[in-house]
Length: 376
Image (cartoon, rainbow, N blue to C red):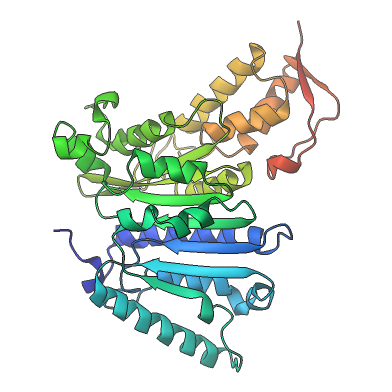
């Protein structure tokens, strides 16, 4: 049976995971709150727990509500203009009851601390469910919400282990419009028991190749497996973050249809890991901070992706800034890396620009396009 993390103080690794959840939602929520074309916002936490640990540190449900409030209740007034709902699912009835109590207490405390005499804007649209995940993910009402292209969905799947998010669930998430998701997976467990039928029933481990000399990369390998399930004709962005705890490796996998969603997740990841943007450990065995040859701006990950960008530009596979910025996203680097490469190639007289050059690297969907020409 999985260890109940709510009955003890959250570990450092759990706090890191929760911090990433918080920062991702903090980046995601205002984008859709202020989007006039979005009618509704639906937030799902399918493995909610009871809301906090024994010391009162917020778990994911209270984190989501706290971020939706914003600093100094900055989002509360605007929230009246949208159909915003929170769905917290927890199959353990005792935990679900405690979660309800913890959320009620949070709301009352929030109102008191902010001298708010109005009813909480979110209070009537918080729903508690006690389903097994397999039952809930196949429910008609949920599938209807997922397929609604007029609403935005943020889905959190902090599963124990690995078996809840299988290929079918992953496909549902990837094909749901205006839906961003994050799920947690015990990557070391999948690797360790890859030949056991109970694992192969959920993940096709026969198509996953691990490098036994690089155990830190096991979550990266699993993330690449999920990415391989997405059609090559579909523009979709998948990213990951590895969390090491002792000798074991766990991880988060994030998915979004939109470049902006990927940009924001990358921003969070590179804030946590300035070397590779993907782990709480030195995943590529770079020089450590404080050593003679450490250079935050010249890490192994950045060097590799820079070389790939140069190769694709000079081979004419990348012919404009938009495709180059998107390629950099796909390689899980911040888009500004592409701009740095272009400037170097211009300075070295390797390329010229067709149109008006710009150094913009954020909000790719709004950046003016320019062409790239090779100088012979």
